[in-house]
Image (cartoon, rainbow, N blue to C red; front, side):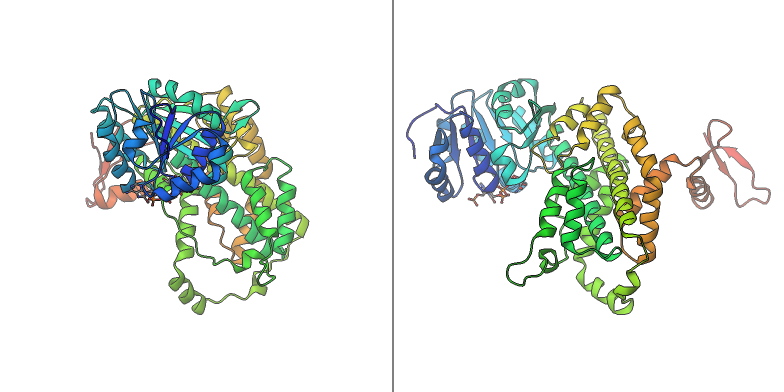
Length: 484
Ligand code: NBP
């Protein structure tokens, strides 16, 4: 390890998959970086294997790490989110000096980031919650970076962050989205949208295979074709790759040897929990999260299969293959519009609740490259917010409204066909229900409100005059009284 002192522009602790690649990315872009990991073997391995990629300064202890960084220091923490982050921060704080910056680049819950920001401010330190998307490849070759923190911290970090981010049409996919927890909040919603997007692609695959009878490699061809149009995205591209892949051991389609039980560990669940707190109906993300949860309930699935066994032949509904492929494409696009519209609604609601001034158009811009949900589609979202920054919902902007109108019949047909065939399409179905819910003249919420007043005196509002009212349901003539 190096004995040189205080010459690194930046330091990073946590050299597992993400930290190691992020450190290499920073070094490759010409910044001197001091690197540290709790278990020194990772630091040694990084220096041995990639020390020639740039100016990397190894540190065996956090004290050494801090000593190697020029003041005022920037220290990036890239460890397992949660307790590990707190442990590292607790160890770091006494070693730092006023005006130093601690950057948490892990997948922290935004509420933890708000808490840490307040705690570090008490020590005269700046705290930055930095959402990094793109997995290990993105970390190495250019992620999408969502920075939450003060203007001062952003100005200090900006040269490094912009130099390591993905670049689309000359614009780095990195932005200062707001103060405090804003960066981790938008990263959380990004991951929620990713859940919905993946579920929609998975439902498309299931329908094309089960209803239209396509083999996985044929579905791969369909996805490849779709990737040449307005559905062009990283996730469609990798879905095509995965479906074309054959398992070397068995010669079977790879997708058939993968156990069909998914987990929902963190950010998807946080997105839904937070959406419930904010009162934002992110139905696509919620259904995607619950679909993963359902898949993992293997005992219940086995019990249900035994009682309600399905004959695969019965699931084959007569469809014209080419027409159905086009219909599924339209349903996927429309459902995707809904999922993104809901995600952006949640960011807007979060910004409102926490007093963060988040530029939604800029968010669409930095999600165009580097991150998992990167898609051509995001250009359209950016344009929509550029045209109308205070947009009520993405769904009604001209481009998306036209696309949804053009696809709505196909969308209904796909959801109806799926229901007839017994193929679960929770994300397609809930997205359609959301769309129909929004555009409906009168919703049965009126009856819900009336029922609540009947059994719980919860009061209701009337369509024809202002105020809250309660009907005395138990009295013979059921008189109505103003409740205010
Ligand atoms: P992990 O999430 O697997 O964490 C492993 C790292 O945390 C190792 O460096 C480990 O040190 C360190 N660590 C732990 Br665990 N407990 C510690 C403690 N008490 N004190 C100090 N260090 C501790 O690594 P990752 O997959 O590289 O992810 C890093 C962060 O990036 C996470 O927050 C993750 O959610 C986020 N993220 C990951 C991805 C992805 O695609 N994997 C994408 C975007 C964001 P050790 O080597 O000594 O055990």
